[in-house]
View (cartoon, rainbow, N blue to C red):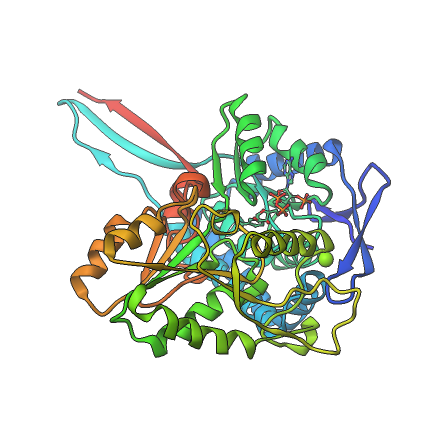
Length: 477
Ligand code: NAP
Ligand code: MG
């Protein structure tokens, strides 16, 4: 049985209710978490406020940095344990689960080093004045985390907030709580004051909603679906609470005929099969210049056929999807696409050891997908790659920008001038040229335009969002 972690103490929910923790590889429950309510959130917010007004808030930047560095080292020491929890909870192949734990340590390391480098400015003003700006923490920050990369998204969001001096209340996704409860325990072990990091588990529309509505929360960082992002922003608007939203994408990989196709194929494949396609920055559309469309599709198709799906501990190319409803959703989108005439180039294989009760989906490469089709517009959040051909650079830009999203884009060409033209013309928070960075790059500011959200996490830039700027003008004559 897992408990909330409030004020460095494992705490049962006042509701007396629990939720089962399911292993996606076999669909079976193996643990329980608390099904918390608004009162539990209020208690966590109170604990965070006390930490912020007390021992945590009083630490200097360098002391905060040292604690984050200790936590980074502790996470590295516990990589196998954390990866094991994440693997069972989320169905991640071993390599992915380990990479996520290592990335979490790297986020804490990065933000440990950033704490004492965040500073304001001095501004020339009228004679007799000295004017400066201070970067101050918001206070208590709320973090609503999705299930696809719990450790990584915790690292980028909570790591940045702590570096800036905030105390945090975290609501993990109901499907992915175990690793984050453990990370909060590790933080207590290395010396984070009680109330600095609080974890409250439960259902999104209950406890997530309660977090968003709690007037003691001074800033909300949300990663998840566009619909829930809208709800969060509406609720936060009622009290003018700042919000950072990261709402996913339908990210294109644009392949010109002069690209190095040997380099393209493995990267395009990885960008959609990593984490079984459940990646906000998944490269889920591949736009290919007409003259190489057929030969490249053939190569991608061969690679898709070789992909194997199975239980997380087999450490294959793909594990299961997170839950049964996600499997049904992905299958539904595929059925709809095929019924409307969209063709399939190739599919991967499900291994015979995969239990029927697990939530598996083989990777699928679709061809000639009409740009307006639902499967070319909506985030599938599964291993489905939609291919389409383009005629020239203008056409490529038009197709790439033709969704409501704008999170990440990849461009593959050897033409240097075209690389820069494309980077300028793509409406996207990140553009990768001759590489693709789904999820990677702790140092790189990350976030979207349009319905992919607003605000930036990762990199030093995140610290600007986790602080508020105070201008102090002193008249001294
Ligand atoms: P979601 O519902 O938006 O969940 C994201 C987080 O928000 C979870 O912690 C969730 O808690 C919480 N939440 C749900 N309803 C809430 C509410 N009314 N108020 C406050 N918090 C709430 O996403 P999902 O249902 O897990 O996945 C659906 C789709 O979202 C996916 O297919 C994908 O397209 C997108 N998605 C995007 C990302 C990303 O990285 N951008 C990540 C995950 C999902 P519970 O899970 O406990 O309900
Ligand atoms: Mg689970």
